[in-house]
Length: 362
Figure 1 (cartoon, rainbow, N blue to C red):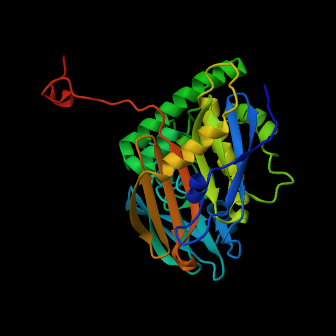
Figure 2 (cartoon, helix red, strand yellow):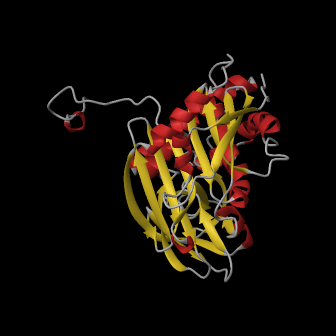
Figure 3 (tube, rainbow, N blue to C red):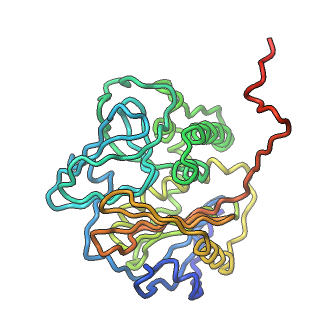
């Protein structure tokens, strides 16, 4: 079932441009892979970086060390964050989940938090429906840790592009349902990943021990693929033979620090989509090149997230590209996140009167 053979692909010059800032020469040239287990294929992106001289702690690291505090504000869709370090910048990945507070949240945007930042607003979405009180022994006013991130394409698009709380809640419920079904089949017993402490919590679902046991089978095959490779700056992954997403960083240390959580999320999504035992053929170089080129061709919009962070979004019919720029580093890009939208379902009205306005039957 595993296919660990590594193949070198040369990306076309057009595709390479996606990995460089507009004012700097392209540095990326090759992809290796696939490294596969069951329905998940991973390709590694190799290249040089421009921001290696800067150190960025991950949110996981910063919260574990107590140098970053994330707190409730009373606003469901906005938290506050402060970096107490006098020397260390902190990078938050869009999709990072913070646990605790009145509801577990996911971070909407990438954010570069400078040392001694002061209190900064942090846009977020709930990934737990209904709770607005203390859970167990947790602090209702603050968040304790970041160990997980969004682990489905639908959730990532809903929170970062669709910007819809209802779609985020829908995505959580859908992933729970898929995981329950596939984990029951893969483990040979009935599995319910919804926690008795809070059935709607995505964080607690991702901590489920039955999920961890199946996830370990994937991780045992894949988590060592970086060993001996010093020039990896990102990865692309495919599920069920279809390109899903890519995560690329302009700082090798930041990529390696982010890798365990990002791989964990890709594996979790693959388990949720693993509804067949058939083998999938390795993707070809042309498909990977087309994915990068198509993402770059999307319509670009730009907005400021904070005084240190600017985000460009390239939206096309089939792809999304989010490019995060570090204003303290001359506006160079730090992170690029690419999503293959996949097959979209288009909902159209069939009657003049909206269905939601109709009286319900007794």
